[in-house]
Amino acid sequence: MGYVDVTGIRHTLSDGRVLLDDVNFRIGEGARAALVGENGAGKTTLLRIIAGDLTPEEGAIARTGGLGVMRQFIGSVRDDTTVQRLLVDLSPPAVRAAWDAVEATELALMESDDERAQMAYAGALAEWGDAGGYEAEVTWDTVTVAALGVPYERCKYRELSTLSGGEQKRLALEALLRGPDEVLLLDEPDNYLDVPGKRWLEQRLLETRKTVLFVSHDRELLARVADRVVTVEGGTAWVHGGGFASYADARTARHDRLAELRRRWDEEHQRLVDLVRTLQQQAANSPDMANRYHAMQTRLAKFEAAGPPPERPPEQKVAMRLRGGRTGVRAVMAEQLELTGLMKPFDLEVWYGDRVGVLGANGAGKSHFLRLLAGQDVAHSGAWRLGARVVPGFFAQTHAHPGWQDRTPVDLLWHGEPGRPGVDRGRAMAALRRYGLTDAADQPFRTMSGGQQARFQILLLELSGATLLLLDEPTDNLDVLSAEALEEALAAFDGTVLAVTHDRWFARSFDRFLVFGADGRVYESAEPVFDESRVVRAR
Amino acid sequence: MTLAVPPSASAADDASGPVDDAVTAAVGRLSGEFAGRVGPQLVVRVVRDCRRELGGSPVGALSELVERLARYRLDRQIG
Image 1 (cartoon, one colour):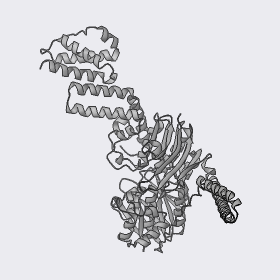
Image 2 (cartoon, rainbow over the protein chains, first blue to last red):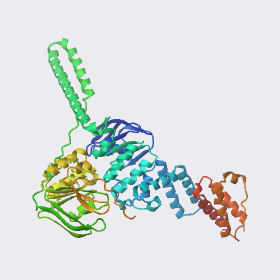
Image 3 (tube, chains in turn blue, green):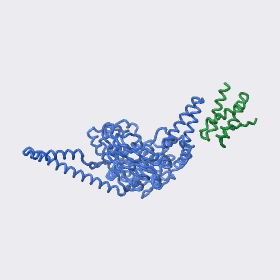
Image 4 (tube, rainbow over the protein chains, first blue to last red):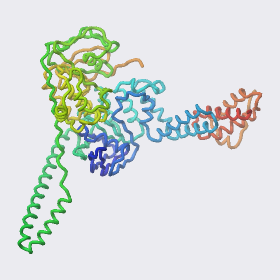
């Protein structure tokens, strides 16, 4: 088994801001540690430093055992990466290097069949065998059968973009959990997983003997799996040695302790400053006091040089004001609606003010259904319509907004779009401040964290005047505090909400549930249904 | 024509079941392919040399590697 030792890490952003300083912690053998913190606090950066992608300005990472890393983007891969390439990339460095050598020599053989090329190819194959490549291929077969239901040989050239986000995650997790690496870094492993998938992940993480450090915003998963919690906040990190159940109290106690230490330091500092001033005046009148004055000056200098204790981290304030407005009594109506090839026809009436949780298996058509209601082009039969004064506002699951990537939030707010008037910089900054996005105001959308992008999308919904919110996994990238703020905002929202979610805690705040079954049936439930199995389709 | 692969000390040291099969199969195919252009003894020698030089290769890939390299060398022999 392996461990990770993080010592004295410091990292400065390109704009000069210190993101992390004096970060110290150890994840011991077999531990299952959660890495939590507000959006933008530096969790992913810290994982990248531990993974060796980034070199810290100061400090060192020590570890034993191979390191397996699942990056956050897995689940939203849209390029031409294949299943085979993903599995290679998740393999130990020796296997990756051997694979690259085999590929390179194969290409060289296509150019020239001479003796040198053939011997190089044979050498690369020997290296592949020595690196455990053939054993890796056997594991990959087990992995693809477990994750996708098909043997490796039948899916290795398949592009990841043809898999759902949940399937991409499952594939990567199966590979890492079955692979040889003893330390796993998992950046939001539960994103895109449906509830059976999350339960599967919880069980596998509880069973594994590997050392795991994972980022998650899913409180149920955190509560079930984490046996310690590493918090990134205030530019550094601290460890709660217990589970997530006692974490909130531990964090409050820590903040109170930090505030108390700081208060005492400030008091002592003021006392020393006052003493120096008094002695300075006395020394002016009495040369006998000069020595005491200089001694006190030295003491104050030493005290200040030692510096104050760390400040209590500022609380993130997120104030979402989703207003909405009164609409017709019937907000959404559907008759014998069927999304082609995804589900059986169903009827639906959603009333003004309803809070409808849209639940069900991955691939059952939930996201397509929301996109249809948002006015996008989705193949369907049957009828559907929105009620009077119902203005849909859509929150996209994967934040797929190609036109936004190089634009800044201020720019996007300033220009507006159809249905959402532009606002001047002052109003834009005020709105961004309420969403905790001041620092991201002038940075390109693509460089914002997933949570920042999610909060920005909710801000746009607020400004659009939507009276029907169509939310596709809105809490997936939100930190716990932002998710709570969203829940409060939805409770105060004057309008109707339909939300696709696999967040068990978030789902319980809804009134009624529309369940997309694995068998294609769409039905209503008064209680959340989380055990619909995966939709099986021909591959 | 039946070909016998002459034993040699070094080859015998290397040989194992699947490896022998690889050599025998390559000799059989290449002898037919180069019949009339090179003698069978040369085919055997070239194949065995190739087999020895490719000694560290994975067993599963050995047949293909040996045959391919031997074919290249035999082609060079006959110009």
